[in-house]
Length: 423
Ligand SMILES: Nc1nc2c(c(=O)[nH]1)N[C@H]1C(S)=C(S)[C@@H](COP(=O)(O)O)O[C@H]1N2
Ligand SMILES: [Mo]
Image (cartoon, rainbow, N blue to C red; front, side):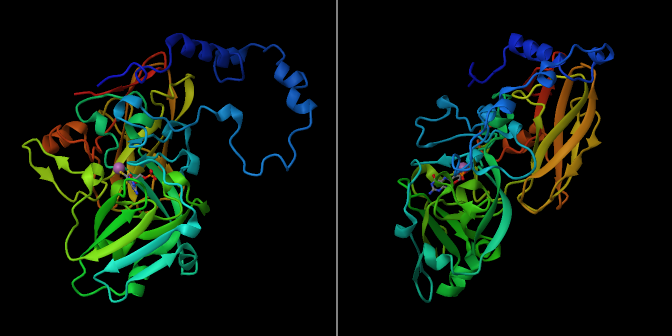
């Protein structure tokens, strides 16, 4: 599967034009040595100095600057049969820090976005419980709540890359991940209210969307760190992310994080998944499959430079990326600029949290040489992110899911950057 719309989104001429224009401004290059012509941006009065701007009555809910309009989720039309049962991707190369802005969180759903009036939403918990209960949104908001930052990664993230380099941009190769601060009630609190029967082993979580998606969750995880969330990044969940209520299953594959959550049934064995919405099974080389591959193993990607964010300046540059692990926190990230021959330890900045994205940087000098950029994450269990080759030795290439192999970006002398694989 290849696509002209994804490979080389930047034309060579477009790139060189941008580089020339940038060279005319304040730079660190040789142009600096000559006395620059007066810059009209400094010497002339500009429109934004001259006219009154919008008052406080114009933007009751703020949106990004029009100059940021390219910073959007994108989808790849040929990946799936319909946009209602599909996915779009977080623009990772445009983001920094660890929090994904709500409007840029990738969306994955199997029956479109359910639009639900919270006054009409109910959460029922029943099955092997002492006292089945139905909660309204108002009931849930009167219970003790917690705030936690977690990544959500779809198990199919990087799934197109199993057989070789495919999509030209970290948005497309790695953009099925987001990192959000959730507000909600722990599932443990709710299960204490209904009272689990001694033979309770598995929970079935069901959504209120047209897909009626359901997934089985072991009771040990339910009582550990699962949140039933109504808030994200300080406000209500977005409709795309399951408004008014979703399950948050820290460190485990995104498919379990049922959105528009309306029902939890407690049983003594795993449920049969409804349709193909919840199969998420890894097919191995010999035709057998891995079941219950819940954990998302440590992974990382360099977001800049990357195919959608080429290098534009020689000299001083910032390399950055994200790392995460479903089994703990990120301990260390190593970066190579020469395809894995030499590694240096990246500088981690910002909070380092369990089961959360972690931000890393390498401040480096670029003299226009070709680079093969890689990052390799190590988590708090000591697990080290594998190469794609090592991963294939264990899993073959029949899988779509759980590809956490090391990504390589090839930076050419002109700065353009491509998704490649090296032997
Ligand atoms: N009700 C419902 N919940 C759902 C889905 C769905 O189709 N319906 N998709 C699941 C899958 S496969 C993933 S990866 C995550 C994606 O969450 P997001 O849309 O917030 O990124 O939601 C999960 N929860
Ligand atoms: Mo998913």
